[in-house]
Length: 148
Image (cartoon, rainbow, N blue to C red):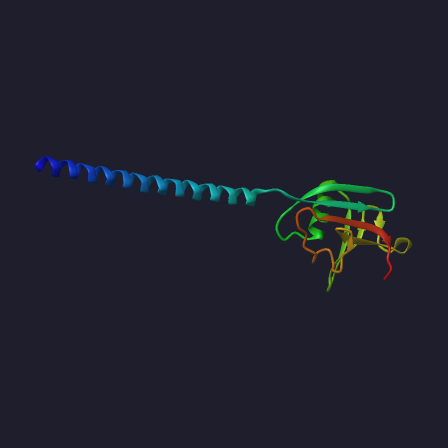
């Protein structure tokens, strides 16, 4: 009888050890899964987002991909490009926002032309420093006659 009781105790102990081992194994998988998710989130934060910037002056055309940060505006993109490529950006501040008065040799008012800008083919309805951009946007600044 003592031998049966001893064998029964060993069986219960073995089952408990296996169950605890399974619990630990599951916990490790959950921790591993949690780390993977955290790493994926870290990767999302480090993804490079870009927009396409096109500048069409009276004689020159410029096109480039510009890296952006969350909250960047069309003006921020133009300013980054201007700084990198020494485009010669001229702006003026108004109550409604910044006016783009010149890029390179093309100054606003020359031959009744002004710097207008478009986001994904549509004329913008606010100043460039107020218009936030997102990844894959196509931003075009064109030196053209204004219909206003």
